[in-house]
Image (cartoon, rainbow, N blue to C red):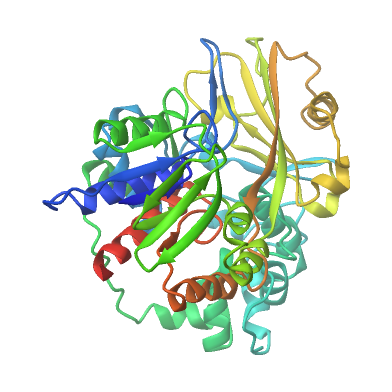
Length: 474
């Protein structure tokens, strides 16, 4: 029997891949999924009305790369293809992405032509960053912050105005702390192996690319051919985990909501006990932990304090989310994906997503303001109220977007410790954790955003890889 800890996207995906990998198994695998809250889906939550959608967490998914195509394969298999709403390259949400610097919104270049032109707030055309990389000396490092790497290779302006706000948008983190391997592992390896990014890039052109063995569905092929920028699900992204949950239930996966595990006891290499707060005990041959590392840390502390300490070293940040709906029919914003604010601007908000441009079937103007992240406690203290976050968000919207209207509806949510931070040394830390598990022969696998990537695609692919690895080794 396999037990899955957590009913977020990682836990649901783990159940999905366990079922897929045991399709031809005459001894059907019994699967338990234990979720502490009263619903599945984790941070993916949608508030739906007839006029608007408020997304509490992710709202779009990238279709790029093997992980992106893998998600599209799953979506088609679940029967959701007709519900997919793509944003193609010519859409304003694909072309228009902005940053707010020096009290002004600046459109970032979205074409090759734009790289050769001077665009504010950059003092030179971005092509000069290439020349900067070519003249930099070789520097040997095991890891570095993504900020230091970009500043060294491409200049401080690129680090401040392009990479730092992007990191805020992806993981609400500080580029000066986040490992370069988080987003730019290949570029970092070019620098370390070839002395520079452009040198490594040029040498890679002459190498034969190894084709992956991922068979693509019609949906994945369409996304690839049409070069989708991002996509979402009609009716809200929560439709995705909800459909996954239904698939598991129809496949006889035993789902238990409102079930909190307080301790994990490893008996031997093929037996583990999950002790619940209500005194019940679930016994399994293997457990898949998809819960955040800091929560798992508490569950294994009694028996494996060293493992617990390593898990607890992965930091998390809190993000404030303010959704705003303006019912007016007059245009309040220029069509775009939204804007981000570099940390050097010292703003209380990280950025704003223009949901009425990104998400279909919205009436009026819908915006989502993101606050805090790595700087949440520093900006708002320990006990900030939702009303205060709402007033801050409205003030920033009024100042930056010149919106004087009052919202017809709003929602404020404080997502506590919602995004892990892949600080310098993260991948070595995760390797050490998994090595400990292997050496002690513990029947547990780690899945999800704490370890293998924070995006929707990363979490799903993490589940796929862990399940396939376990099935191969069993």
